[in-house]
Structures are given as C-alpha cells and as structure tokens.
Amino acid sequence: MNYFAHGRLYIASPYYLAGTAVPDWLNVVNRKVRARAKGARLVVGHEDHQIAEVASGILQHHHDDDWFHRTDAFTELSWDFTVLIRDNLPVDDGLRPSFLGHIMVELLLDSVLMEDKPQLLDDYYQAVSQIDGLVVQQAVNLIATKSTDQLAYFIGRFKEVQFLKDYPDDEKLLHRLNQVMQRVKLPALPNSFTSLLPEMRTRVRTRQEELLAHEGQSPEVEPAD
Image (cartoon, rainbow, N blue to C red; front, side, top):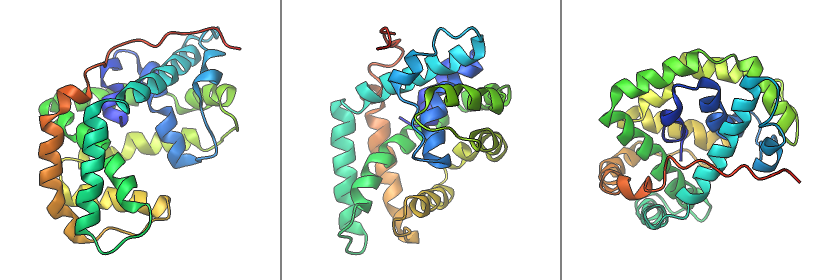
C-alpha cells in the first residue's frame, strides 16, 4: 500500500495518519532508518499522546502491508505488471521490471482511490497540514534503528509539493516514477512507458475491492519483548 491507501481512513487523527506514512517517508529520507513494529510497540504507551499516535500508526502501516501483500489480487497483478513491463521495455536483465510490477499496483491503487473520492484527497492533505514534523521525527527517533534529523524537513516538503495529486495524470506519474528510479539507482523509464498505464489502471480498478478486502482492521498490540 502507498500513502493514500494507508492513511485515508485516519484523517481525523493526523498523527496516527503520519505514523502510517512514516515507513514510506523514511524510504525517501534514509533507507537505513527503519521504524519497525517491534520498536513502535515500545512507544504506543508514551505519555505524549501525539508520539503514541505516531507509534500506533506505524503499527497500522506494518499490519496493513502484511495482509495487503498476501492478497491474491496483489500477487497476481504485480506479476502481470512485471511481465507487461519486461515485454514492453528495452531488454533489462536487472530488477527494474519486478520492482515496478510491485510499486505500480500500490501507486495506481492510490490513483484509483483519489479519482473516486477527490474530496478525500483534499481532506488527507488538510490532515497532513496539521502535523508538526518535529514531533513525528522525535517519535521516529524513539522507535527507529537509527536516528534522523531530516524527516521533519521532508514532511514539510511532502505538505508543500503534494505529489500524490500527480498520480492520475500519466505524464506526471512518469515524472514521479523516474524520481523513484533515480533514488533507487535504476535506469530511467522512457516516455513510451505511459502507453502501458491505461491498461494497468484498468486492472487495478477492476480488483480494488479484492486489494482492500481486509482494510480497517486494527493491529494487535502485543507486549514488546
């Protein structure tokens, strides 16, 4: 799942919503900083309610990723997209097709959801605007395997740029994908990649209910070891 699918159910609780975004934010800020469920469980009872909410949202993120990636719909779509991409891009012996097959399901699910309920995307960003990035960074530094001093800045950029709004537009989505490619040190995608997007969007839309069949469940907060 990506930002919007993870967080859209929690717009009434901005710091919980922030927690659902933290692992993905850290993938951009510093992939060596990991906010794992085990660390979050140590913080869910924190006396600062906002920090506790961030920790709870991180647990929700990991819980949702676990069931989402085990759905038949995700497994089948990600494989189908990997094959489609591999067969329509220049010969690529690396990881790019499989990496893209995975993330395209997630990004296009966000796109379908925001196209269906555009007001909810505005509400999502309104909730994000209420988040103090320094509070989230403090929570993460209590939870993560390594500390970071860059997360608060990135959250500010996330509020400002609002790049999720680019996903429904094929050309803008390609631009965002190539930013990801650069970040993970994979070759850039050609402009022709946009010709594949309508078919992939249709497939994700057709199976969105299956992809989200288990959403809304709260993770069990087991005692930390």
